[in-house]
Length: 76
Image (tube, rainbow, N blue to C red; front, side, top):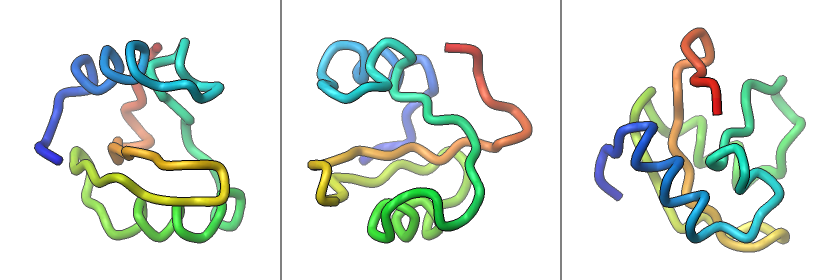
């Protein structure tokens, strides 16, 4: 996936996601290691800030992920 801006990613999440973070533009925030399922964490860990990957399959479905700098998380 291309390197989208946060605004474009959030707009797409609000339009196309059926997940619980839809209303927040897909924003999960920061979390400690081990909190998310392994395929999801592995996908995020392999990215640099601002990079996107997907689809990532987990037992919860398919995800498109954008890694953000946790020190600069946007307000959804």
